[in-house]
Length: 98
Image (cartoon, rainbow, N blue to C red; front, side, top):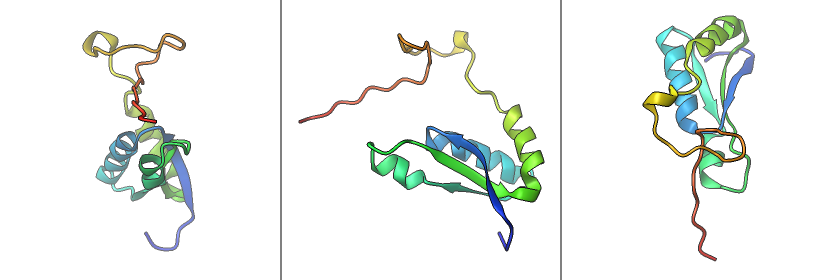
């Protein structure tokens, strides 16, 4: 990407979310990289923060693209269990064998 100051454009909980934004940015000619993807998938005890970074000069355009991406799927088209505490669709179950 050359010698440009990189900034974090967005932070996500899951790598797939970061890849969606990266793909959208690159389709608009804005280079981007994904940071901390391996840490979020290899070590479940670390906070799951996957960052998308890009050039500071592209920040305004990148944020406009980010804002155009739907944050959640519509409720009537998405069948999933909701979190009883916060009503989020972002739920997963883990089985640990101790």
